[in-house]
Each structure stands twice: as structure tokens, then as C-alpha cells.
Length: 410
Image (cartoon, rainbow, N blue to C red):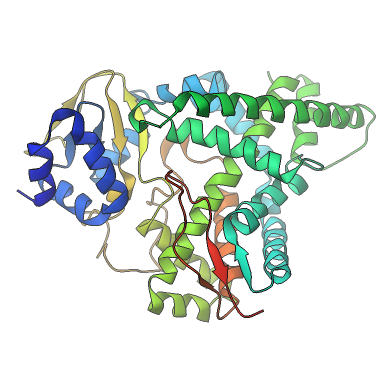
């Protein structure tokens, strides 16, 4: 048996998940390789980890068995906290339709111009989290998603605390002060709702007066006022808020991770810089970097019915209802039974089977926008030939990058 499993087996039961969690974030690839080979379904008193591709795909796609129950206390009646319900299917379909994918090239041009302007305005040094990787999606939300006039710092807080509570304040996270995170999320929701209530009311008057505007809020209001579907103004506000919440922190985390991985691989960094003038050739470097360090190393689900993972193998485990299951998709993207030569950095690798944006019913709503925004932010950085990090990202004891200093010759 490998060293990780020896240490886990020797540990007290209440220490197994904390130990595994440290390795999951601190020593992921060797830890995952040992688990896939010797115990692909790792059970602990708190959570069960699935580490092979087939099991992760099953957990992510079999939503009738593995549900998003743990989102409900955080997101209430919002459709993302539901599985295969009428509200989920209707509202997600509406949001996919109003996020006009034909506008993505224009969005990418906006993102590139904004990122380039922020870098050009900095005197050879920039704290990239506040100054770039959060600032760009905030600007996109202001110009494209109905948040014009909102204070950027407030927008960052609205997104940050909602993401912190939903993804980093679950019972198995053992946050130092989970109640404080909940209170901050509640305050963020109130602030965002107050702002959007006024903005949506203003836009509603324009729509009623026949003023045509081709933006997501106006599209949603026209649909709501038509009565063609069950979609009231409160749902307009909650879904516009969801656009901001989903855009800022995930984009920032992914962009920082991609930069960190590329800066740690001088050969790949040089190759990426060589093609940075061509987004079609460049983007693969970013998504391959995110395979090596994704923003979300796992997705959590709650089991609803007895289900066998690793079926037909000596490692088969029956998961019981009520079990919290982590689909460790970071491990799955290195599963040698599915991924060819997984340890090789290959920017031409197909991304359709990756888990970067999730899979199944709960795949990221903004996947198409993220696939443009994340690599474009990174690309603008690497178009500066001597841009480099002054040190590693600073997580300030948490799970997301809070600061990342970049320097270059102005």
C-alpha cells in the first residue's frame, strides 16, 4: 500500500478527511495517483471521495441519485439549488437563450481591451486579483449584464461572499467562523438586491415605453412582461444577480491558476507567448493549465439512493443515501484509463471531456463566456514579454487567491 493510504489508515477516524483535504490541495497529483491505483473510492466519516473518471462522470451526470442538496441552505429557491425540476429547466433555458452566444466575439474584444487598459495603466506592477482578474469580469457585468453604475468594490463583495458560502462554507469545510460567512452572504444579497431592484425598475419603465435595448436585463423583462412563460420580475432580479455571482470569483480563480501553472513551466510559458497573438492557438495552453490546477478540484453531491461506485472491480463500494460524495474531478482529468499520457502538458488536448466547467445537468451556465474571458485575461498578461509574478498567489489562509503580484518593464 502507498504512503498516503498507510498514513490515512493509521490515523484516527476524525483526522482522515482533514489529512486527505490537505493532500488534495497541497500534493494533489501523487495523492490522486495512489488513490486511483489502490483505493479509487475513499470513504471517510465525513465525505466519500471518487477519484476515477468513470465514477466522477457518474456522480456528475446521474443527478437523480446525486443531488445538490447542500446548495439549498445557501441559495434557497434559486434554480441552481434544484436538480431536474421545472424551475431549473425553464430558468436555465431562459438564461442560456438571453446570453446571446453570437455576442461572445464582441465580449471577448471588450475583455481584451479592458485587461490591456488595466495593465497599461499600471506602472510596471499590479496586484492582479483586485486589479485585473476580478476587475475585468466586474467591468463585463457593468457593461453587459445590467450592473452599470454599481460600485466595483460592492460588486466584488456581492460575488465573493455568495461564492464563499456556497462553495467553501459547507459542513465538511470546517471554516473558522461559518456563521460570519453566512452573515456576510446575507448582507451581500441584500445589497445586491437593493441595487438591482432600482436598476431593473428603471429598465422596466423603458421596456414598457417601447425603448428598445438589446441587453440581458431588457430581454428578460420583455419575456417576463409577455406572459409567455412563468418568469416574474423577482426572477429577473435573482437571475441577473446570478450572472455576477457566477462570473467574478470563478474567472479570477481560473485566471490566477492558469498563470501560476504557466509561470511554473518555462517551456510552456515560452510556447504560449509565441502564439499569444493568435487566440485560437493560445487558448489551449490556458485550458491545459487548468487541467493541472482547476479552480474546483471537486464537486460535492448528496447521495439519494444506494449506488455502487467502481462497479465490477475489486474496489467496488456501495454509497448509502445521505452520504456527501466528492467527485474529485482534478483526479479524473489525470485518469490514465481515459486521458492519453495524462502527465504531459498538451495544449492541443480536446476539452470536451474535461471537468473545468463541470458536466451534466449542473454544467456552468456561463461556460461559453468563461471559455472566452479566462484565456483572454491570461493572454493579455502574456502579450507583455517580461511580465512575471513577484511571488506565489496569496490565499490568506483560504481556498481562493486573494492577491497575486505581477511585475514587468513599463
